Each structure stands twice: as C-alpha cells, then as structure tokens.
Image (cartoon, rainbow, N blue to C red; front, top):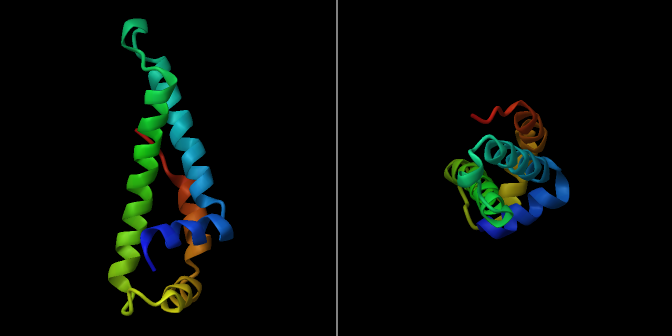
Length: 101
C-alpha cells in the first residue's frame, strides 16, 4: 500500500486525519494571533503550516506501519495488520490526546 492509498483508507474509515487537520489549523491560527501584527502570516501561510504538520503526522504513521508490515505492497496485509492491532481506534484516541507546543 502506498502513502496515498493509506491516506485514502484512513479518511474513509476513521476521522482521525480530519480531526488532526482541524486541530493543526486551529493551533497555527492561534499561534499566528499571538504574533506581533507586523509579523502575522496571511491565511495561506497559516494553512501551509497546518498542511505541513498534517503531512509530517501522516508520513510518521505510514513509515512506522510500513516497517512493521512484512508484505509492504499487499493492501490486504496492511488491512489485516490495521484490524489485528485495532489501529484505527488507537489513532482516533491518539489524535484527541495530542498537545501541540
């Protein structure tokens, strides 16, 4: 399973990525509000920063799973692993517990 397929699967089967995106955008917007007026970013730059956080988060999950799954190209092996270890539920819980600094 490649990263794009993995992202699509997660988006179709749990809301963790969407929640992470929302929280990252809120974090970046709040961080931006705390900057001096002259140093504030425009909305596009805030969005890019949130998107970068999202991509780092997704890549980290994908990389860890990819190293744990023996047949890296077999989608069914990925699905079996995800189900066996209850990763969707764990991911949902983890996103709720994340504290941005």
